[in-house]
Length: 422
Image 1: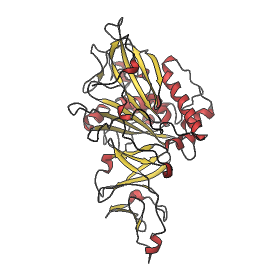
Image 2: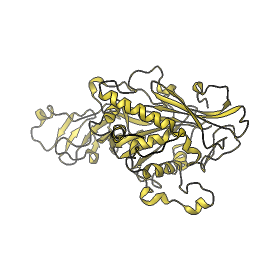
Image 3: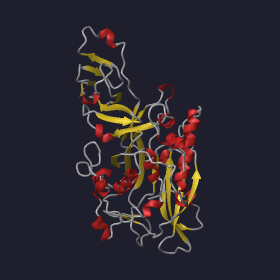
Image 4: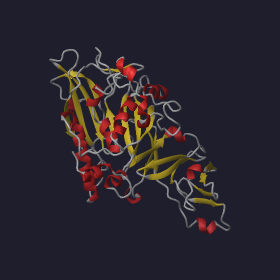
């Protein structure tokens, strides 16, 4: 259980909130690369930690991230014309380059001198792993960019599900690091079967265990923590154990257990105090494996134009109870809700926009949740008192070297040394 003060420290990210200021010392996911794939294409509006920006790729292919509101009269640059190496505001024709330089003031006579005195807010920007990353913190001490865990090389292909969630980031992330819930909530999509390890089919991930109450063990690290959910396997449970490890990379990335076809990661990033952008990444360094973008979104029941609109907003949400099908439940579907993400989001959104953590009854399966809360609350408090933001010091291990694990091993094996090798 958390006090109201602790819950606010954990969940609040806007303005001067310590957690939001901590996150501003990290590179943040503004949008997907394919949203701004074309030079002179449509600008993309992004909201990060309560701050609105617009991302675009100019005529020469250079990326820009600008404060959304034009400095002139505060109209949105997301409506702007992306042309001739700059973004032009529709209201009065002011135009800005990717670095915020004023290129034109169409409404101002003799504007050459005035143009040199104004520079619009532009953010440092990088492209890696299928994402556009921006830095919202102070630029006099910018954190060095490092590729995400799913980009060990620039040519690795990623498939990404993107969905807006109507609740606070912490309850979304807590879902991602909660291995125990998968045995119940996702049991229709992750059924037990006599397989050697998690086996992906077109509509399910088969798993070699019927155990719904895993034993959890955790190890703290300099990047956050990783932990193991230990279950009895269907076969040879006297000598073997089914291990699923999860890696938490502070402050908002989780590597979840893979299957035999692709690795998996999630970014649970705060749009503001009350909304979260959920990214689920599937990838594999071996080009013969993996899953295509279309197949991945279909598997997750998160196809743009079908379950989602063009802004990645869900057409089904808590307001219509995700069209839960009670007849399907009677026939064996555990939740009556289609798709792993939607099943999770029904739970997260049902907690309220910011969950009340002062009235919970936690159990032994919530060990990772408790560790996450303690770690991040202390990190926010330490940062507020002058310490470096968690995860910004140069680590001995690059994120691309980190890996979750899933498989059956001998009980004599130490899970801490296990890494995914599929």
